Image (tube, rainbow, N blue to C red; front, side, top):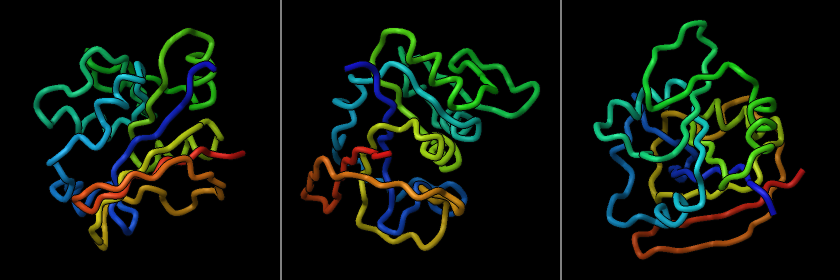
Length: 172
C-alpha cells in the first residue's frame, strides 16, 4: 500500500490545538488515547519551526528514534541534532520521502504547517482527538484561509473521559 501522510492531533471542541499563549494545560493526560499505537506506525515527522522550538522546551525529546524534519523559511535556522531543517515545499519534500521505503509520515504541526500539507493535497488520513472543552481562543487547527477539503469518516472512538477520536480519510 505504501507510505501515508497522516495527521494525529488533539483539538478543543472549538478547533484550537493550543490555548492562548500556546498553552497545552487543557490536554488530557489520563490515557494515551491511541498515541503509542499510532507512533508505532510512523518513522518520519514533519513539523514547523515554531512547533519544533516549543517541543524542545518540554524537556525530554518525545520523538526519540524518529526522523524529524523541521520546515523553516529562515535562511540560517538554529542547529539542533534532533531535527533536520528544510526549506523545501511540502510537495517536493513529500515526493522525496515517498520514493523511499518506510513507515508513515506524521505531520505534527502547527496549524500553518497542517494547512500547507492539506492545501497541497498531501494528507491521506487525519485523526482528531476532540477534547470536550471550549477554549475560546488560541492556535486554530485550521487557520483562516484554509481551502475546502472533503473528508470521509473512517472511525469514531469514544472514551470515558468524554474525548472523541475521529479518524478521516482525506478525499481529493
